[in-house]
Image (cartoon, rainbow, N blue to C red; front, top):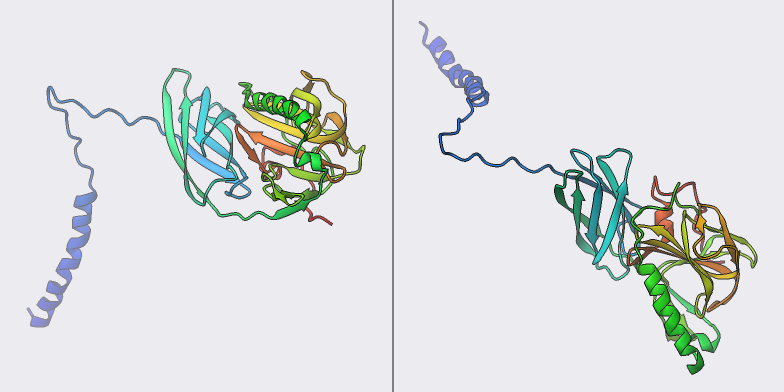
Length: 324
């Protein structure tokens, strides 16, 4: 045999061995049999698949969670940002959703969302989901209002405290079912003229952040229910003026303030788009407009962030426009 031919075969031999080694490593191996008296490891519990959707993951935003289990779910509980959010059924028995609110005071960074689902046979499935909260800066608005709305007179202080307690109790109520029906709509057609989260300065004094949006509108412009629910309050309040609060279920509430009139009674059931009153200039205002606060549990969120969520908004809404 020629020396060169032997060298060529010797050079190819290691390469031929690689596929053979790969076959040996990937060939199915016999399953290990449990020995008498040996305990088998318990099967891993079913896992939950979690996804989220949001206009932005930032303070003041609403986040829609979708939780899918291997089988049917009968209850879903979510805890995040120091609050609790109740779930509701989705398109199939194994898919549920929850609307989660990111509080205005939330700092940027990773936030943990804890999820607990209960199955019809009593099992509890748990999961954790991470949200990367971005930084968000809010504008400052300077307003001139009647002095009595900055420093209320002593004669009004008892009334203000009664109303504070009453509204806090209403907003803390959790109706254990979704009542919003076909989804959320815009309660008035006007542009947003005061943004959610704006730092407010009244007559030169710093007030609390604006935990709602103001919609432009002339006095008398009709106001409709932004979603289905039960009218929990229909009354005149010191700061928010003529006000309607709607319980949408699962701890979600809308407050519609500064109305000129109320067209519904407390306890009435409303559907999205039902008339509830008209735009006015009552309470602490600088002119006619509609104030809309949306609460998810204990957290106020920008209502426009909910209208931007597919499957939550019933129809398209008007674009946000700057004051002018």
